[in-house]
Length: 255
Image (cartoon, rainbow, N blue to C red):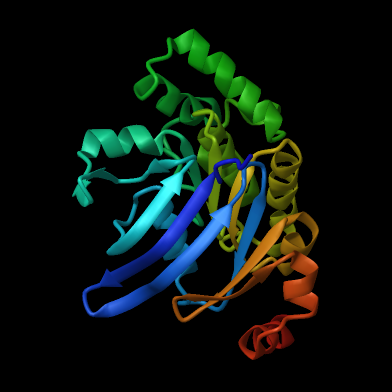
């Protein structure tokens, strides 16, 4: 008996005009797994996870989330683009946390977390407020629910952004360099929340430069360079005993 991977990426290419950013990516992430994607800037890491939730449209290949073809439908061997409404519906299952927090400055932490459940899922105000308070507690911010983004540190704002993504009850969480905009002393509080999410069984794909997080929390580490996956495997194998010279050169510089 085989189980369907939560994420199944098959032969994915992405072009931006003449620029070939993803060059035939194959990757599977199992349910409950934490996959950490490492690599130099410009290697295609962020583009890859933006393709998973349809923020970028793939140029070739196929990408499945929990067995469902994302962004496309197939009829008689021909692929057709889904409508914007159908893509938005698919995207509800995938939470995304960005490098920048993108909170609404005129809304409190609670109101920021409430917004999508109310607008997308149609929850009543009291239901959305209860859900928001639960998720803010989950990221350790119960005492900041009535604060506006300008009254919060960068780490607190990013934790609100994580709570906002969790409020949609996603099956999969994507993190695009979630700590790279933070002061060094604030990185730990965000990584701590992500570590607790991983321990709860959330399927996660994390693009980051935090090698320590990859080693301690990752089930699978993927090293990307120049639009291809150079190496993948268990964290300690890839990070501490890489097989490929390109991987070894990268970790020699960053460790």
